[in-house]
Image (tube, rainbow, N blue to C red; front, side, top):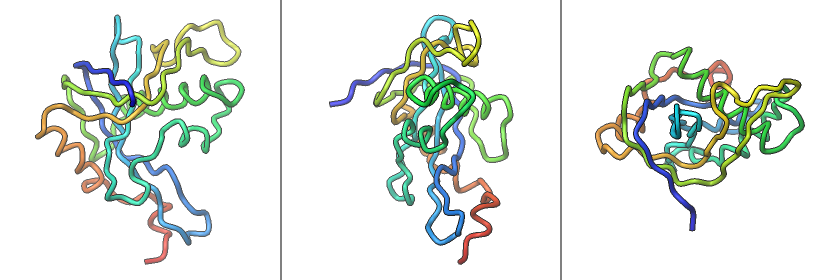
Length: 170
């Protein structure tokens, strides 16, 4: 049984194209991701998939997604690199919003926790955090307000297709 954590904070919800076929022969994997924070001063990032089992590969494990992307700027492949990449993913979505994203100034949320990575540290630095976070909690996230959750589940409905998806045969 998975552990859970909960909180109330700013939440950014955005689409993620996390799997694609360079030959454009397989369905694309799209999901909805939410980024929040918790802990003293928001020092702990919270990043989770908004479950949408109706989508092709719509409920991926985010640490597996990070591993497939093989982030190279965060040190050797492993939990620190993957957690740092996911923290960057959420932080970047917040600071460079795209049309169709959902930005909620304050919302209660619950995370079905899959993994926590502590002591995030960028490669080659003495920094003690990544994008202001020393820890990242990863899992599946639910907004506790049913109306907000319904709005979050519709994020893909208001987002245009990526270039990769536009190339895929009908």
